[in-house]
Length: 51
Image 1 (tube, rainbow, N blue to C red):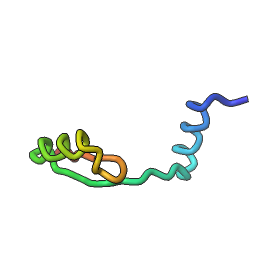
Image 2 (image 1 turned 45 degrees about the vertical axis):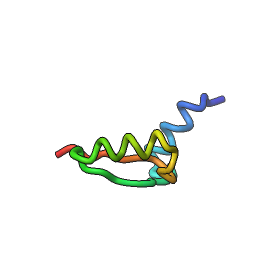
Image 3 (image 1 turned 180 degrees about the vertical axis):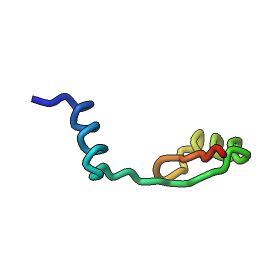
């Protein structure tokens, strides 16, 4: 019997994990990303890109 963490790791390794990305921000847009998160309006995961 696998734990939820093991199942999660297997999905990552298999490339079958489905994640809904709401918005992607550059690091200089972090204030906007945080505001969106606080307002619960992202519509999925928030991704912040760091150069």
